[in-house]
Figure 1 (cartoon, rainbow, N blue to C red):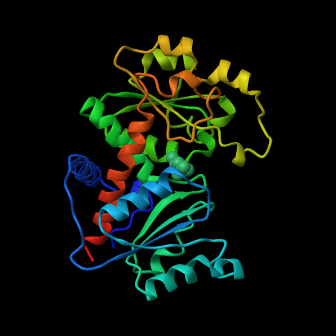
Figure 2 (figure 1 turned 180 degrees about the horizontal axis):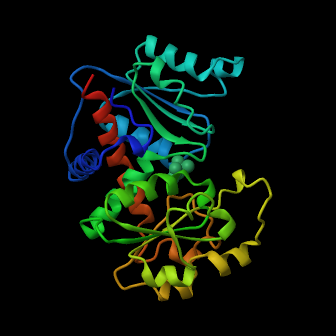
Length: 294
Ligand code: CP
């Protein structure tokens, strides 16, 4: 089936096809399944953007939504994720969208289920639809990825966005560098060039800022907001050192005044709200790919 759990499963041709389809939706294309179809969104972690943009995408494609609430479902009685999805499949769901705190929660499920699973973020693992919407935003700006300098900055250790993006951007020919506290780079430093924030702003075509994921930090490596902003944040002074054409991305939610200055969130270079808008078109393309092949 044509679910999507990790960017690693997509060839560059498949990525390009999804970007083209999403751009067509952005340009006004419409598509609806030839028979009624049902989608269920299962979010076991908080979300605003991903959850509601999937919901808007599903409604734009004319899908029927099965409302799922972890607090009032039989998950509360101990039902497993597998039994929950198997149940939804049995009663007629055609696709499930899942956000889950466990890395690679999908590995045990995939061999046993026929229903397409779209991963809306797994722990510190992957966030494929966020990655695709970031790619669409970059492609709209620069037309291509070859030789683009993308610097991913901040809390890489906990970032599924960084993992998904570093890998696919490299495959597409971009030069990926990393920046942020050294002790937050683990796993990335072996593969990508480390640059300081001052070097990053002079080099980057795309400054890809990341949220500090306080909920996953467990109190270690503590910085005050002010210290972090000064040492590793995109400050107003650093923004002035950026190249004329360079843009700022951030998956959001944003810790304003910490990883990025409050005033820069909506500045001329920022594409943060464009990313959110593109999220709907990407999710329409990913849902269509999952459902059009049934
Ligand atoms: N970017 C992102 O995944 O945001 P949410 O957690 O609000 O879905």
